[in-house]
Image (cartoon, rainbow, N blue to C red):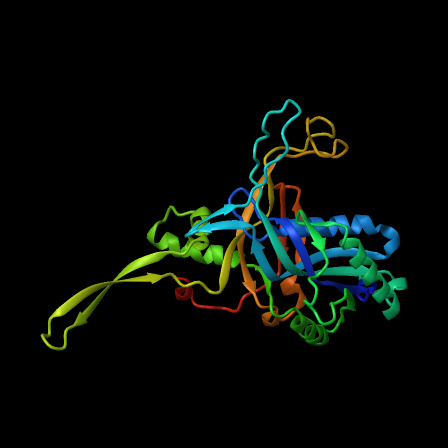
Length: 337
């Protein structure tokens, strides 16, 4: 992006979208909130649906979650998805049940965009934001349907916004802090790739052959450890041993997340792979790429770059992944032990 184009940057805010039956199986190894790739995919689909005549280009997306209602049945620590019985087949036999996880969401989406000169005026931005709000209402968000807010939920339903981003760092951060207060209560998803390296170094002190997968699995669970405590009986003076179970501390609300895909094959020419979704595009087999994320209150973010996820592609390694620029405050390693 050139210096002249930088003044056209803006934030598109789609507040408090109510989404029903979104996909909650985010990857082969995780479930919960939809994968961030679902929202970067929505960003691409929205830009294509608006078309070049809309005068807007999309570069990144941030997600703030206000409500999360998984469609599951709870039995102690075990949860089972609510599944549907599909209609019988043409020959009258019973169709197989395909496990599908669903969740109802209340989210705010924040897009980093670039506007043409014709869209920089306040009236033009307001008109475009309302148009995009109408378009998104007819689209799928992470496989779910956008539905109107519940009656009485809001005194005045929040409207889509297009806010220009200042070139001045201090002004931009001040404007972002004012904007982020509107997203409370809620939690924003940010990247914590750094935790994997910290945990890996810690594990390798005890187990030199530990890998990043071991570190990822260790951060993905709640670990309980038995700690031997020795106390002195005040009456007898004898030393008494007791076992206390403690839970490993975590620096915040840490979750395992898929962040993209890694290539398993070379690019196949269009039409050579049967069953491809689009026979006019090259095809490649991929597998999920995992990292760690953190849910953090939006008012704790200092800049819009902390919130946004951007898709990236490394042709040499065949890596397709989403990146986020959030940098956590420094903390001692002992806090995650």
